[in-house]
Amino acid sequence: MILIFALSIICVFLIMGTFCVFFDQAVLTRRETIYRVDTSEKKVALTFDDGPSPVWTPLILDELKKAGIKATFFMIGYHVNKYPDVARRVAEEGHEVASHGYAHSVMLYYTPAEIEQELKYTEYVIKKVTGVTTTLFRPPKAWLRKTIKAKIKSMGYDIILWSLNSKDWVRFNHHRVVNYLLKNVKNGDIILFHDSGHAFAREGGNRLQTVKAVSLLARKLKERGFQIVPVGELTGERKQWNTIPIKN
Ligand SMILES: [Zn+2]
Image (cartoon, rainbow, N blue to C red; front, side):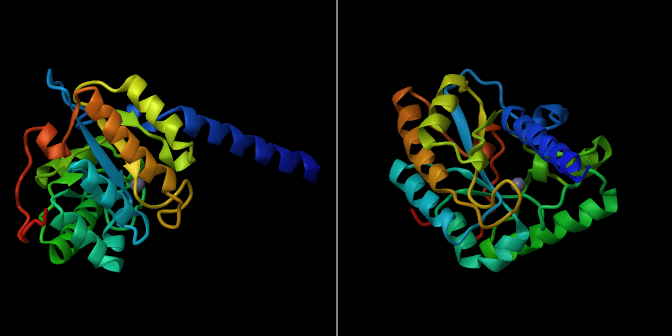
């Protein structure tokens, strides 16, 4: 009996795991969000979620600097408080700083008051540390209800999802990640990576394959004539509200 129960639990986990690896749940919540941009220009955006990380974000920043690329970082407020120097470096190097909420909580059942409180506090923390007033928000795991989306927009935020998911949290080899992205990339795509965390935690993951993928992808996209820009530039709404000088 116990064996059957244990096997059933393992099966459920395996099915859920396979589902998460091969299906992107964000396609279900794209309505009333920006997940890509219609454009005839060969432009795409690279985005990084869940950081800053003291280990992986600096390595990704080094790769972006070598490639001469500016990206968008959807930061967790708690990590900004914990690693202020890394968050500041992201802003100083001219990348776009955006909000991913304070604690990476799934916000599906939030009330409008709760979302307002968390977004305002995250905005305050990011502003205090980086000097940037955030105007882009990405919900953890992409889950949001319609009423909450309306509330977030009424606060002046654009809700940003993605059209191309690197699935880097699975820790595929970087060649595999880049081949998948290159096979599917189109003008106006918003590409999702992570600079912290793993499948079950917002911190502590190994992002080495992400670091390598960023470097390779940047080179390959350039060869194919793509320009990599921050999300706000792709949408034509980049707001230069960074109050500290940018180092190049
Ligand atoms: Zn996240």
